[in-house]
Each structure stands twice: as C-alpha cells, then as structure tokens.
Image 1 (tube, rainbow over the protein chains, first blue to last red):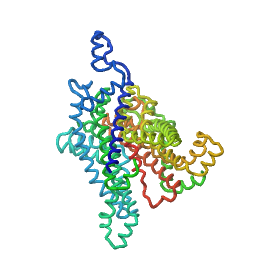
Image 2 (tube, chains in turn purple, yellow):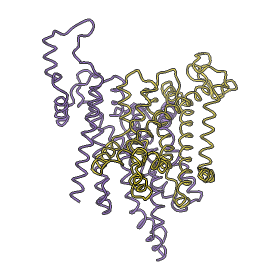
Image 3 (tube, one colour):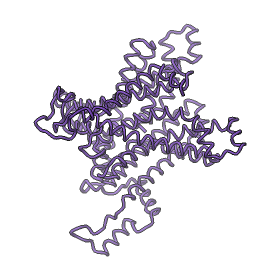
Length: 308
Length: 292
C-alpha cells in the first residue's frame, strides 16, 4: 500500500510538472519581451537591461522555468496585468474559496439528487420509473449548461425576482448551485444505475436473494457498497465537469469565483493570472485524483496491483 | 462488413441514433440551400421576432433568420468537430501503434505520458490554447485546440489492441514471412482495431461538438458574425435571448444523444455478448470525455 501511494504520488508530481512546463512553454511561445520600446515612449537601454536581468529574462529558459517553479512553490505568482495593484495571489485568494464553496455545495446537491434518481432506476429495470429516471438523467447530461444558466438568470432572477446575481447569501447562491449541480446529478444517477446493475448481476447478490433477504436490504447492504469503487474513479471526471460548467455558471450569475477570473484573465490576455489559476486548478485536480485513487485502493485490494 | 451493418441496424439504439444523425446532416446541408434568408443580413425592424412563416425559428437581436443560422452554424460546428476528430484519430492511432511496437520499457513510458495527459482537464487546456491563439481564432486554431485533448483515448485503444494481438499466431506467421512493422500495423492490426476506433469516434464526436460550443459560448470561438452552434448560444447569452440559447442547446443535445445512441448500436453490433444485460453506459463515457 505504501509503495502504491508513493508511486501514485510520484505520478501526481510528474503530471503537475508537465502541466506547468507545457503552460510555461506555451506562454513563452507567444514571443515578445515586456520591455520593448513601445510607441510613444522608450525605456532607456540601461533600465531595459536592468529589468530584463531582474526578471531573469536574460537567462536561458531552463533557468527561467526553475525560477518560475521556485516562485510557484512559495505561492508567488507575481503581479497581474489587468487588475491594478493586485497580485495574482490576491486574485486567487479572492476567487478560489468562492469557487470551492460553490462547487462543494453543487456536489452535495448533485449527490442528493443523483443517488435517488439512480436508485429509482434499479428498483425495477425497464419499468416506467426506470425509463423516466433515465430520460431525466440523459437530458440533464446532454443539455449544455449555458441553457440552464440562461433560464435561471433571465426567468428566475430577472423576470420572477426569485434570486439575485452575485454571491452574497442564500438568495444569490441557490440558483448557481442548482445550475452547477444539474449535469453532475445526471452523471451520478447514470453511475449509480450502471454500477448497481453490474453489481446486481453478481453471484453473491443472487445468493442473497436465494437466502430470502428483502430487496431493500440487498440494495443497501450488498449492492451499494460494492458500487462505490466506480464512483471514486468518477471523481475526477466529475470535478472536470464541475470546472467546465463553473465557467458559465460564474459568468452568467456574476459569481466572483476563480472560473470567472480565469475567463476574464483570458479575455484580457492577462498571462500571469492565467498561469497562476491554471497552476492552482491543476494542483486541485491532481490532488483530487490522487485522493480518489488512494481511497479506491484502500477499499479494493485488487486495484493496488494494476497501475493506472 | 455487411453482417455488421445488419446487426447495427437491428439494434434499436443504433437505428434511432443513425436516423437522427442523418436528419441532422440533412438539416445542416439542405436548409441553407433551400432558404432564401441571408444568415448575416441585419435588419433591426425584425429584431427578436418569434417563430413565424417567414422565419420558422424567429429572428435574433440583429433580425437575422435563426433557422438558417442554426443550419449554417451546425454545418460549421460539425465541420470543425469532424476535422478535429480526424486529427484525434490519426494522432491517436499513430501514437498507439508506435507505442505498441516499441520495446516494453519505452512502451511503458509512452503510456505513462498518456496517463499524465489524461489527468489534465481538457476544457481549461482548450481555453488556454485559444487564449494564446489570441483574437485570430479561426477554424484551424479551433480544430487544433479541440484535438489537443482527445488523442489519448484512441491511442490507448489502439495500443491495447496491438498488445493483445501481438501474441496471436497470425502475427507470428506474418512476422515469420518477413512482414515489416509498418505493413504489420496497417494490414494486420488496423482492421482489428477498427471497431474499437469507430466506437471511440462516435463517442468523441459529440464531446467535440459540446466543447466547441462551450468555448464559443464563452466568446473564444470563431469571430462573429459567422454562426456556429456555440456562437449562436453566445449571442443568446449576450443579448439575453433565452429562445436563441435554447435552440442552439437543443441542437447540440439532440446531436450528442443521437451520436451516443449510434455508438451504442455499434457496440451492440460489434460485441453481441454484451447487449441487453448491460445498460447503456454511453453518457458515462461521454462525460468522461467531455470533462477531460
């Protein structure tokens, strides 16, 4: 187990390094230098040289990357280009907790909605309840999130005044949370259904039936725990689904979160901010996948053997 | 191939899926030719009209006919996605084939790289690439940005197929008569991997369509006024026209579900032992893809 965790940790660090390296190289690939004499004014040559040296831009790129990494490790991403007198770190401090809160609430709601929806399907496969639940989860998953966001903003907020934009208390929070939770809820329902159906066809479930156990008990005691492993492996796709949707949810509902900051930074070509937010996002995703894998391995011995 | 097609058409999911896909294709192909409306003609006297005889899907903020824009937008969205799919499949195939032919150590390393690439969230990566592409986003950059995150799964599939087949006698026989690695891959491995690749293609396509729409709806897509499904959604979000967002979303959702049904039908046709008992897992796979 320790060896497994160690190996997994190594992969995680590697992934993080590759991500940072690729983003770094991409940003370098844009070309240009920040201290080039612009139109209308020019920086004295000695100052140019001094600034270039200060930012290590006169060094070869491996040194630059090392410096960049060293700064990231100390959580120093430098100043932003688009917010005056703000550091990237400050923007991250402002946005990430909001996004995490939003995503956390949405995940909880997605489980709350998705679990019953999925279990409803398994009670009677092919029955009307199953068909209805499957249809609902399919629609939840295939509909682009911006439609729900648009409906929420224009009907619930603007027309019916049932909520408000921004992020200040429950009245502004409930719509973004629900919007963000819908697609993952469909996903969870799908997972539960597929997982439970797989488990239901196992021999030990048939044996439980043969013993005369009630269906509810079989479902809760025998089927549910054994459907959990695919759940854990779904943690990362779910997280990515949340991230993708969060771009729209935060933008449309004007939630001051990290995803919105990311898009704003992207629009304004604020490269240091994009880099910083990418680093944080990559770290979160990598940590989540690490946690999910380790937890899955703790639950299921077989997973430790094959390396994923 | 004949029996495969027959089996495919026998499965309900496959029939429905391919039927709807054909309908979408007809809509996208024929409507712009048959309609007299100009997709870019601005007429503010016709702003935000509901469906009518002259404009079956109504008009947008600029008074442009939404039916024609939806069809043309779909055409471009599908073209972009298909181009990206082509790249994804070719790159994935080559990578997987090369990895599968390499000695074990290198093969391992190559697959580790795939694991690492899979761990990176796909959509933010795409956003970053589009940001770097700057304001000059065109079909080429969009296709490239879409393709970057997609080649790993086909690569894995192809490599897996190779590694499984490598032990079989017909491969040993082919090697014994002096068949080189390239011919071995093209003549002996490719036909065997084709089924898995085809399913992967049908799963990847809607994911690509969705991601194009997401990127464009954030304003990172092709420059206006050119319509794509995502751009139509962007306009709708921008001008707070719920109907416009709805028709774009509906088109995307219908396409995505149909493509997944088709993939399902293919799966049933290719692996008959798995039908009926196992439920449709297509959306699980779809999400796994979109979200990466």
